[in-house]
Image (cartoon, rainbow, N blue to C red; front, side, top):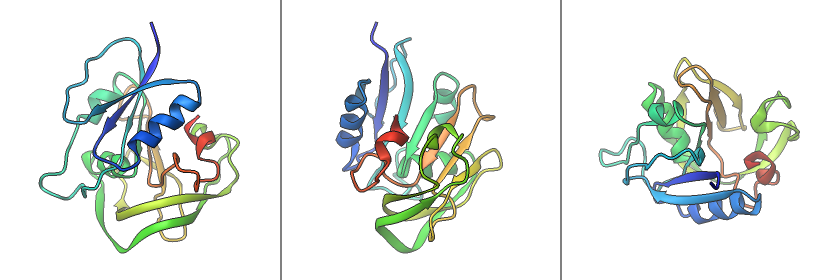
Amino acid sequence: MTEKILILDFGSQYTQLIARCIRELNVYCEIQPCTKPIQWEDSIKGIILSGSPFSVNDPQAPVVDIKAMGDRVPVLGVCYGAQLMAKVFGGDVAKSAHREYGRASLEHNDKEEPLFYDISLTSQVWMSHADTITRLPEAFLPIAHTENIPVAAFKSHTLSKHPLLGIQFHAEVTHTVQGRAILE
């Protein structure tokens, strides 16, 4: 049995790149459309929710049952995936005052946080979004920010059996200097 990461594709231009990065870490992964029901098997060890051209506030925006996923495996939301996670659990996502596209300086304060283990306290990341999380649900804790984004990364260990994590930036691109280490 091959252990794998399942990537749910919400239509992001970066989904294939997420898969490539995961595979370059010597981890098997598969991409599946977010509209297809997950065929659960013991080999799935985690799920990544991709970005999307949609806003989570669009009436036709795709939605998945993140709680059910988190009860089975850890879940990482990337950009749209993070915004969706925040919104599904009662947070607020709104149109950014200005679309953030390009390099940003990510700051976190806990090198022992598994997502940022051994990552510099300040690191360059790549942003590409028009919406931002303006209020996290109560059960989530912010774990990183940028100058313009107060919630660039967050986590919850209480909403499901496994951790739920969200990153507003794209760890899979080379412009996120320590992105591979974050995905690892």
